[in-house]
Image 1 (spheres, rainbow, N blue to C red):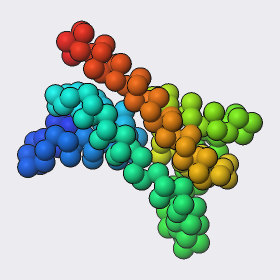
Image 2: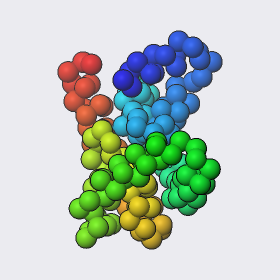
Image 3: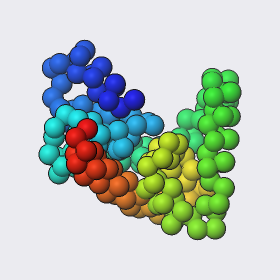
Image 4: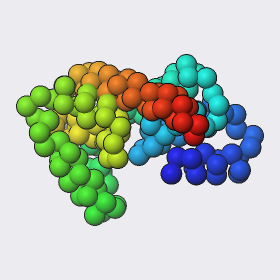
Length: 166
């Protein structure tokens, strides 16, 4: 999916440089840092450049999510805007938060750090808000989780994929 998105961006926005593409992919929910690192690898960017851009891009929206998501969702529910989507989003966050209540910090860090579908900084921020975690603590756990995900993705992309020639 990430490779096709990068190809699409390259085809229709040739004026964008490679670094901007990695940043855009890293900011997007679902793809996040995982997609940004793969995009950087496919675009031939150096490991350090990709790492910095992907981490910054992935973490940039997180404070806004932590501070404003509940207000935005409540406003939307109050005004009957996308209420079924909001209910599904809340249910997903509640489901993902199961098992994290007892070990919030470590659980959130691991949840964000393991690069699997449905995990990541965006969902982690939503889970932290669902659990009403201290925002500073949540931001630190999410940041450490993003760094763990970065290490895993660098090993996979710049290590493994590079070795097998993909």
